[in-house]
Image (cartoon, rainbow, N blue to C red; front, side, top):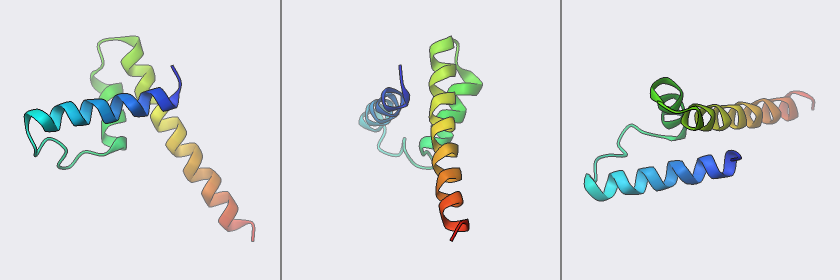
Length: 71
């Protein structure tokens, strides 16, 4: 599983949650989802999924920051 699959899991879980309760997504975003996966996962897959999302987001932020500070 790669980061893209983890993001699709986030989107799927959010859609399923919103179908049951439209307010489900309130206060949720990809970061809170990833942290929730790491903190409460009962499986290694869920834990790793959360870490992949967080790692990718941190990498993107660091890359973006590096590009703006080198000018």
